Image (cartoon, rainbow, N blue to C red; front, side, top):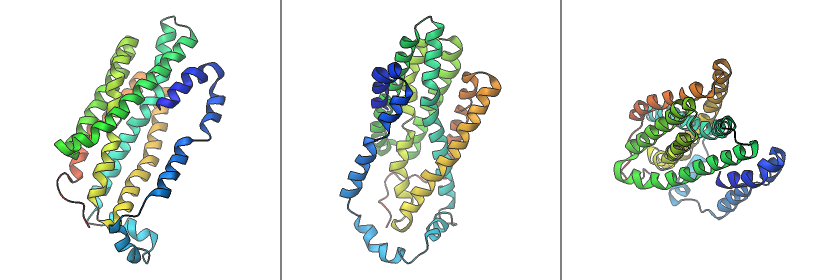
Length: 268
């Protein structure tokens, strides 16, 4: 996001989104992921069970993570990841539009407004990275549940602060002040990379992780369409986006569905 914000600041606002799109086509990070995959060694625990797992049909693994033993935690993870992803996407989707609207209303030029939008995205991305570094440190000290709740509360403060208070006061200063809070809160998804693996044994660890992280994206996608409808129906971004804080409030209680994994060793 930081790289994208920098490219948009120097290139996108001058030459348009089409060139930005073509710059993004040869995605460098995708090649980096391929490089990491090529250098990764299979864990010893997995190699011990892989002969048995190869004999089982693909859907058998999902049946296990949705079975009586893991059902509650799996659905809990799916709901929490859906809430987290909606917050993760809402930030960049409407942040730049809101900043540009404020800036134009303050009689800044379109170019100045677009530059401010790029700065807003850069700040958001920078503090999300900081949040990702905070997540493992905080998880080892207060546990996964409390860590996620901290990030959820930050998301609620960030959403309400930016899209309720700053939006209707039309205050660019207040909006930019709250962006770092929203940015750190968006790192809530990083908690799951620490939390999920210890909830399942080696045999179904990848299946449990994949089910929660992949299917939550489909549900969160539907949520973004619903948000777009609310914006059109209400004729305002502020109130509609502010409503996305409500799932985070529910998410605080959903964390009780998922077991705390601080302390116990990784299950076999």
